[in-house]
Length: 173
Image: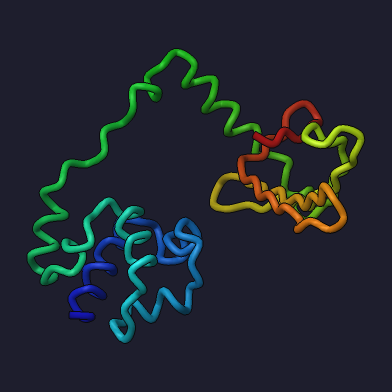
């Protein structure tokens, strides 16, 4: 059973540039994912559901015999390009994407950011921001830690998005 699962998982990964890209998108440890690809281990129910949601298959489908699964995947309709790609502003957005990543390489890394909290007026928030390049884009992750009252547990917020460099400013969207 694990061998069919491993073959099916390798087939699904073949639709992406690399296994590393799949691991990044799934936010899973590469060595652990390699164990699933080899067929030595089977993922937990939770992890299996994450895989299925990511690849767009059902749990029972990914466990099918590999020849049957391959036929199933081949007959599935390919995703349709959304109408947004044909919108009048699509060309402008594509141009912004191109120029927005240029010039950011020298800013890649970790930074502290300090600003006034809107949730707790009068308090300052200090967050950790990480800028990193993945493929042809620069992404950010902002991690904040907020303690409203000294005896309460701290709240941790993690926010992710794209970074753009336009007119000597970095925009985090």
